Image (tube, rainbow, N blue to C red; front, side, top):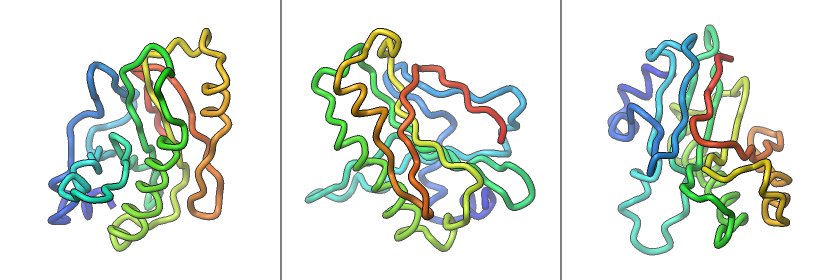
Length: 165
């Protein structure tokens, strides 16, 4: 699948070397080889849509787990120290756009496989040990349906490390 993504005329233009925005980022375990994953900026795909442009997450990571097995990690990055002004419903909509429109509808021929693992990550600078507001509780209780399963949104802090499958 990774080679298909790299060769696809549209998907190859969305490839990125890192998943980072305003100093908030993800990292990869040293045990993961660079050729075993791709990072896509799907916001770039939707950018030309002027009217009714859907909200999208910052990065889509596809990680090779083994022979024909892949893990899917969808990442929303937020440079914030508090959840003030943050809309939980908008976050869920971003993940839904990525999973159900981008992966299934737009690029199903390349991306539609049964993923071994699906992670939906909200990564920020928020001190998650201190922020126990209703909004935070609402965020971590949310899940998004994809491939006949509900996948929870996981809130974590910047420099989150993606581990091997």
